[in-house]
Image (cartoon, rainbow, N blue to C red; front, side):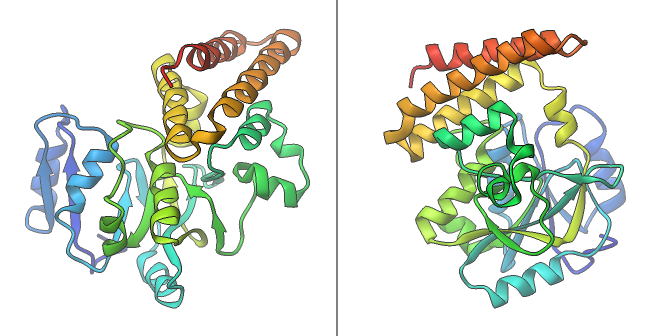
Length: 281
């Protein structure tokens, strides 16, 4: 509220078990719309429930593990007004220590995924890095991208409702990529990274670095759901190249990694290959 005082705020509580609801009612009663869920319906459905209560021209989906450090809505809304072909805009994300947090990626496709899984994207020239592994590219001006991490995403409310909000095909993970490709394929509108404005995201890379068995497996499964949904003709090639890339990664770990992360990395390789070989898709 300090930075976006003119905004209408909708909070969806996905059946939290701590004192979140009491805290919100105590500090913000009357200033927010609080939706209390009877069960945890997941990230996508939680956002969709909140969207039902949005009546403003623009909407921002903001994760609970984000921290605003400046006013960002005004500049992003102005950017929307000047760029009618843009459907989704996201500010740059920062780690809690102020360093840049990667938030841009490409849609799941065979070659892109092969390059990413081998971890060679950081060594590519800038032009190729931006094309194939934008996760490692530093943006300093607004740019059209495939998709953005869903920690902080702006859109026109009518556009988000026109594409039916977040897909229910995913309980958690991949729904932000799905949202951006729907904006492109259904409405013909772009997704843009807006690095002039920044938001701290407490999760992000730290979560990826401490990925549990179930989270990593769910991400692998969801990526298959995504490519079957949007690129069915590429599914077999995608599964083959992804499996080869993980096999190569596993060999690299066996040969060169001898620290505490070794077992976790090899376990991820095992999970990914198992999902690819035993998927129902």
